Structures are given as structure tokens and as C-alpha cells.
Length: 236
Image (cartoon, rainbow, N blue to C red; front, side, top):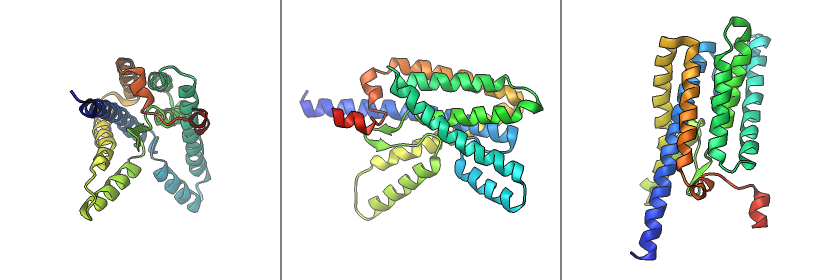
């Protein structure tokens, strides 16, 4: 076997592993988003929608709802930051991040009662922000896990470039998060209809199962799924 052929095989394996992981995490995000929306009426990962709804609430004079949504956006951003910080100090970044997501979701599932609805909402939002740090790229291509609008935009732009003559097809991987999100949202909606708020507990279990599955992925491969901080890149 030639060196070039071996490199292609390794590249294909890494890409397949990354896409499988990204699909599973997007499935998790879809379940969580559908359940969160069904339980609260607001999005837990779609911050574009929450921004628009906050603006509409402000326009209607509903300051309470607008404040809840604006704080949710802040919590989502902090969740993203927390995921990066956790991953920076972890030997197995994806496992640690997904394990923390599972713990946060499990904690949220224990918050029964109307008085705890808002804290539960913020915990779920934080978990969805955090999950984005699990996988940031696949073979150098950025990929979103909860931000499927961006993935669809990259897919559409890649399709446009292909139509005008660019025969690269790496853009096709961007459809994976959307498919995962759609499938997860369907399952999440069904789980919520059957189990209500207890669906969060089932989603937390799924998150932990995905986290444990990542232990089977070699560390060297996992490192390629995450963007290194610029300072660290320069030091190398």
C-alpha cells in the first residue's frame, strides 16, 4: 500500500468518525430543543429565534418575557465559553464536555414544579451552549451542532459553487447536523408527549451514552475535531 493511499484511508476514517459523532450530537441537540420548546414555549438552542421573539416581546411591552429570552442568550453564550474552558483542561475533551452536558440535563430533569420552570430552562440552554464545544470542525471544515442555519447556509453556498464549476464536494458534510437535528427533534417531540418533563432525564442518559462512546475514539483523532487556541497554535 502506498503512502498516499494510506493517507486517503486514514482521512476517510477520520471523516466518517467525525460525521457520526456530529450527527449523534446534533440528534441530542434536536431532542433537547424540541423538548425545551414543548415544555417552555421558547427555544433552548435557537438563539436567532429567541432574539427575534425578545424583540417582539419588547415591542408588545412584555418586558418579563423579553428579559427571560435575553438572559437565555447570555446563558447560551456562557455555556459555549464553559464548554471551551472545560475542554481546554481535559485530556479527552469530547467526553468531558458531553458528560457535563448530561449532568446539567439530569439536574434540569429534577426541577419539577412551576416555580423551577425558569431555572430549568436556563440549565437546558446552558447545556446546549456547552455541547457546541464537543466538536468544532471535521478535517478542517467548520461544522455546527446546534446552529443548523449556518450549516444549511454553508451547504447552499457549496452547492452554488459546485453548479458554477467547483467540483469539490466537502461541503456536503454540512447536511449531517441538519439531518441529526431533524431526527432528534422528532424523537424529542414524541418523548415529551409520552413522558413530559421526564423526557429530559432520557435525553441526559443519551448524552452520557454518546460521551462513553467517544472513549472508543483515539485521542489523536479527537484532537482534530477541535480548533486549538491561537496562542497554543503559535507556540507550536
